[in-house]
Image 1: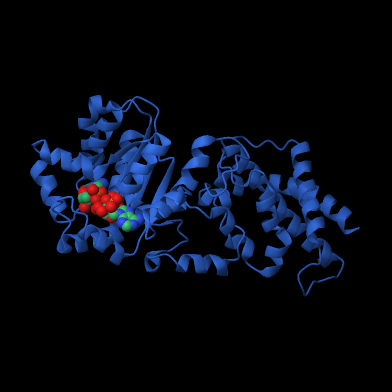
Image 2: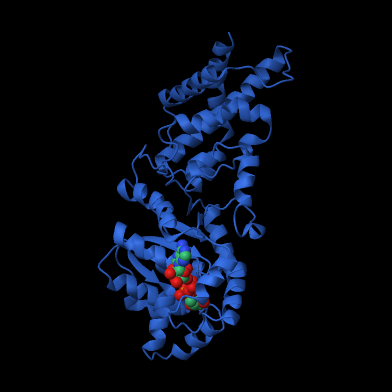
Length: 386
Ligand SMILES: Nc1ncnc2c1ncn2[C@@H]1O[C@H](COP(=O)(O)OP(=O)(O)O)[C@@H](O)[C@H]1O
Ligand SMILES: Nc1ccn([C@H]2C[C@H](O)[C@@H](COP(=O)(O)OP(=O)(O)O)O2)c(=O)n1
């Protein structure tokens, strides 16, 4: 017996997607309102909506050989084998003239995710995540009135269990890659961890989360939810790649902490948080919300420069026998000047930042290069100190 991917590949043949497409995954619990919001997005942003559940139900109706198996799995609240769903999605994408797709209710487990990526080579542009309390979802499903066989209390409970156990980890996976869009991302970036903690606390599924998870509060009325959705789509849609695109609220998790640098790294202690001027950087940089690789790379260079600067000043002050017992009294204005000078020296000395350089590579920048940065910054810092 072959793997899921093997069998999906065998059957894929003519189904191979031979056009460049933009894919947004729309995820959330059963009844969280994915389909409802997808209809709004289609109307306003020109996407084509592909609901995995609808495709599977259409397959049952078509009398296909897989029909009975799919029907039984859905009645049990289980997830249909990936190769079946992926083929349906591939066909729908290939046959549609559009090149922008909302894929709703997929991937629903790790197997779905990995197989789709391998078979189609498509990575989502971003992930939209609707978070809604179970009681609300249950109420909605029980009054959905679409004649669905799985909208009964017994199957609903099973679907909730599958969602918590299999689907949430997929959302967390995309979150770790900075793909999950949130609305207040730019704000959260500058907040101390205690505030982030409070934000995380407000999540309906908080007990299952291992990290901060961007979400849209899907328990609100349809119109309000769509306002949040619009904030995610509008900027991304208007100016997808340019620098300083004003994508306020449209940034993903990665956009704010650019390159996924954990916020805690800058908040380890008061001294470091204060000294790096991280807050200032986030709000003053034109590119802080931009996710293009260029900006990410630049941001990494700055972060490294700031770190090097911190080390240098610590060294300088300890050499002078001055060990600060309180946070260093460097005023915000001066701090910004130091940082901006450090940045311009870096640019002037043409430290090349290849666009292809990924965040990890940047962070593991060779010691030699870090030393170079440090040298530049020691001079700047010394000048400032005087
Ligand atoms: N924000 C909302 N407030 C109240 N009811 C909603 C909201 N969003 C969707 N619904 C209703 O809840 C039910 C489930 O919504 P649906 O979009 O089908 O969810 P999903 O696609 O996530 O399963 C539908 O009857 C829909 O009209
Ligand atoms: N990727 C997917 C998506 C849906 N399914 C099956 C299992 C789900 O319980 C049903 C219904 O999914 P659908 O997305 O239409 O509905 P809910 O979000 O659960 O309300 O379809 C699947 O097996 N694999």
